[in-house]
Image 1: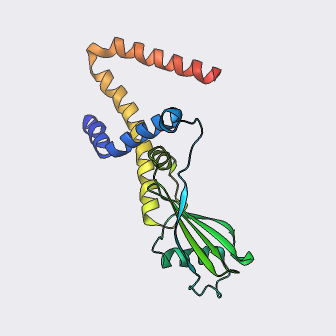
Image 2 (image 1 turned 90 degrees about the vertical axis):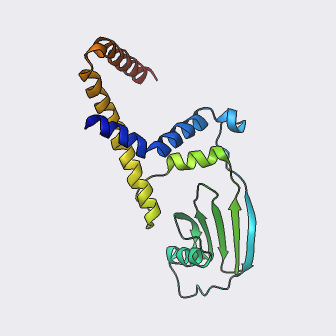
Image 3 (image 1 turned 30 degrees about the vertical axis):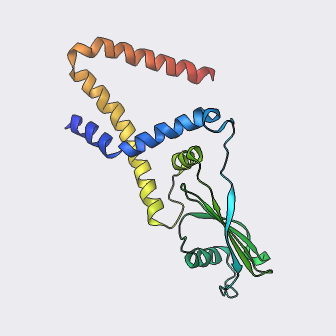
Length: 194
């Protein structure tokens, strides 16, 4: 049963294992991918600019306005806000790993500008790597957060089931014990010196 748990968790989470490995490579060796040691966000380009045709006059709450604008643009999903609708200017950042949107709503000029971010592989991987939490009211975000929690459980499970399987294979006990000791000693040394 332990072998099956060890195996099947790995099979189910294979896309996440590959994504976390690739994104860690992209962050650890950023200069090889982007030519810079700093994170480079792809540029935004205007894809749409139009007169503000939505009736937002009855909405005073920035979050309500953002939800109405995103629904109008068919871009509902995880987002954050900059600015304040009460002051007449709101910027909505619709965060998406495959290309985010920045929507600027100017109540005074009655203009809405929609910009889309270009795709960058390194940035895409970093956004997936950092995505977590149950902080948005969207099922896809919650599903991703549940899988991140499952991934945490899987990593702990792999560690403990790996130790269990090692202990059950008597010919590997000495070599396994040496590996556990050396790994633990190196971990303790690095934690105390970095």
